[in-house]
Image (cartoon, rainbow, N blue to C red; front, side):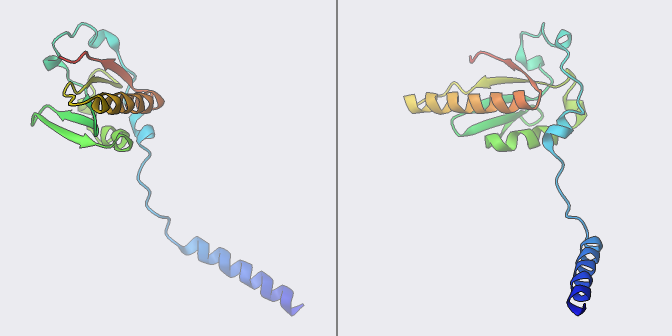
Length: 143
Protein backbone atom coordinates (compact mmCIF):
# COMPACT_ATOMS: atom_id res chain seq x y z
CA UNK A 1 0.00 0.00 0.00
CA UNK A 2 2.91 2.36 0.70
CA UNK A 3 4.31 1.88 -2.79
CA UNK A 4 0.88 2.68 -4.28
CA UNK A 5 0.66 5.91 -2.28
CA UNK A 6 4.22 6.85 -3.26
CA UNK A 7 3.40 6.26 -6.92
CA UNK A 8 0.29 8.48 -6.81
CA UNK A 9 2.21 11.15 -4.89
CA UNK A 10 4.88 11.10 -7.58
CA UNK A 11 2.26 11.46 -10.36
CA UNK A 12 0.49 14.27 -8.52
CA UNK A 13 3.74 16.17 -7.91
CA UNK A 14 4.82 15.70 -11.53
CA UNK A 15 1.47 17.00 -12.77
CA UNK A 16 1.63 20.02 -10.46
CA UNK A 17 5.20 20.77 -11.51
CA UNK A 18 4.16 20.64 -15.16
CA UNK A 19 1.29 23.06 -14.51
CA UNK A 20 3.45 25.62 -12.74
CA UNK A 21 6.00 26.01 -15.52
CA UNK A 22 5.67 28.93 -17.93
CA UNK A 23 5.06 27.83 -21.51
CA UNK A 24 8.01 28.47 -23.79
CA UNK A 25 7.66 31.51 -26.01
CA UNK A 26 7.36 30.26 -29.56
CA UNK A 27 7.84 32.39 -32.64
CA UNK A 28 4.63 32.63 -34.67
CA UNK A 29 4.31 30.35 -37.67
CA UNK A 30 5.26 32.39 -40.77
CA UNK A 31 2.68 30.64 -42.94
CA UNK A 32 -0.07 31.48 -40.44
CA UNK A 33 1.02 35.12 -40.39
CA UNK A 34 1.12 35.26 -44.18
CA UNK A 35 -2.43 33.90 -44.37
CA UNK A 36 -3.64 37.09 -42.67
CA UNK A 37 -2.72 38.96 -45.87
CA UNK A 38 -5.61 38.95 -48.36
CA UNK A 39 -5.27 36.69 -51.40
CA UNK A 40 -3.65 38.22 -54.47
CA UNK A 41 -5.82 40.51 -56.56
CA UNK A 42 -4.43 40.23 -60.09
CA UNK A 43 -6.58 43.08 -61.38
CA UNK A 44 -4.42 45.44 -59.31
CA UNK A 45 -1.10 44.37 -60.81
CA UNK A 46 -1.62 42.51 -64.09
CA UNK A 47 -1.20 45.70 -66.15
CA UNK A 48 2.13 46.65 -64.55
CA UNK A 49 4.91 46.38 -67.14
CA UNK A 50 7.51 48.65 -65.54
CA UNK A 51 8.65 46.82 -62.40
CA UNK A 52 9.76 50.13 -60.88
CA UNK A 53 6.05 50.61 -60.20
CA UNK A 54 5.75 47.25 -58.36
CA UNK A 55 4.79 47.84 -54.71
CA UNK A 56 4.66 44.29 -53.25
CA UNK A 57 7.75 42.31 -52.18
CA UNK A 58 10.30 41.73 -54.94
CA UNK A 59 12.61 38.70 -54.87
CA UNK A 60 15.82 38.00 -56.76
CA UNK A 61 16.85 34.35 -56.93
CA UNK A 62 20.63 34.12 -56.63
CA UNK A 63 23.29 31.42 -56.57
CA UNK A 64 23.67 31.83 -52.79
CA UNK A 65 19.97 32.04 -51.90
CA UNK A 66 17.32 34.66 -52.47
CA UNK A 67 17.36 38.42 -52.06
CA UNK A 68 14.43 40.44 -50.79
CA UNK A 69 14.75 43.77 -52.56
CA UNK A 70 14.25 46.77 -50.27
CA UNK A 71 13.03 49.59 -52.50
CA UNK A 72 13.37 52.21 -49.77
CA UNK A 73 17.13 51.65 -49.57
CA UNK A 74 17.70 50.13 -53.03
CA UNK A 75 19.34 47.24 -51.21
CA UNK A 76 19.16 43.47 -51.43
CA UNK A 77 18.61 41.59 -48.18
CA UNK A 78 20.27 38.22 -48.80
CA UNK A 79 18.43 35.26 -47.27
CA UNK A 80 18.74 31.51 -47.24
CA UNK A 81 15.63 29.97 -48.79
CA UNK A 82 14.47 28.65 -45.40
CA UNK A 83 14.53 32.22 -44.02
CA UNK A 84 12.31 33.64 -46.76
CA UNK A 85 8.83 33.00 -45.35
CA UNK A 86 9.71 34.46 -41.96
CA UNK A 87 11.20 37.55 -43.62
CA UNK A 88 8.06 38.00 -45.72
CA UNK A 89 5.81 37.44 -42.69
CA UNK A 90 7.62 40.20 -40.80
CA UNK A 91 6.89 42.80 -43.50
CA UNK A 92 4.19 45.32 -42.60
CA UNK A 93 0.78 44.85 -44.19
CA UNK A 94 1.31 48.10 -46.13
CA UNK A 95 3.96 46.23 -48.17
CA UNK A 96 1.25 43.96 -49.62
CA UNK A 97 -1.13 46.33 -51.49
CA UNK A 98 -1.84 43.72 -54.23
CA UNK A 99 -2.49 40.97 -51.71
CA UNK A 100 -0.44 37.80 -51.24
CA UNK A 101 1.75 38.03 -54.35
CA UNK A 102 5.46 38.65 -54.94
CA UNK A 103 7.40 39.49 -58.05
CA UNK A 104 10.48 37.36 -58.58
CA UNK A 105 13.31 37.19 -61.05
CA UNK A 106 16.60 35.37 -61.45
CA UNK A 107 19.95 37.05 -60.99
CA UNK A 108 21.34 37.38 -64.50
CA UNK A 109 24.97 37.37 -63.37
CA UNK A 110 26.28 33.87 -64.12
CA UNK A 111 29.98 33.28 -64.19
CA UNK A 112 29.77 29.54 -64.84
CA UNK A 113 27.41 26.71 -65.66
CA UNK A 114 27.39 25.90 -61.93
CA UNK A 115 25.89 29.33 -61.25
CA UNK A 116 23.01 28.49 -63.59
CA UNK A 117 22.47 25.17 -61.82
CA UNK A 118 22.49 26.85 -58.40
CA UNK A 119 20.00 29.51 -59.53
CA UNK A 120 17.64 26.91 -61.02
CA UNK A 121 17.84 24.89 -57.80
CA UNK A 122 17.09 27.92 -55.63
CA UNK A 123 14.29 28.98 -57.97
CA UNK A 124 12.64 25.59 -57.48
CA UNK A 125 13.04 25.77 -53.70
CA UNK A 126 11.72 29.34 -53.51
CA UNK A 127 8.82 28.54 -55.84
CA UNK A 128 7.86 25.55 -53.72
CA UNK A 129 8.03 27.53 -50.48
CA UNK A 130 5.86 30.30 -51.90
CA UNK A 131 3.35 27.85 -53.36
CA UNK A 132 3.16 26.03 -50.02
CA UNK A 133 2.44 29.35 -48.29
CA UNK A 134 -0.26 30.21 -50.88
CA UNK A 135 1.71 33.20 -52.18
CA UNK A 136 1.27 33.90 -55.87
CA UNK A 137 4.44 34.58 -57.86
CA UNK A 138 4.76 36.87 -60.83
CA UNK A 139 7.96 35.70 -62.51
CA UNK A 140 9.70 38.57 -64.24
CA UNK A 141 12.12 37.87 -67.10
CA UNK A 142 15.73 38.82 -66.43
CA UNK A 143 16.98 41.92 -68.19
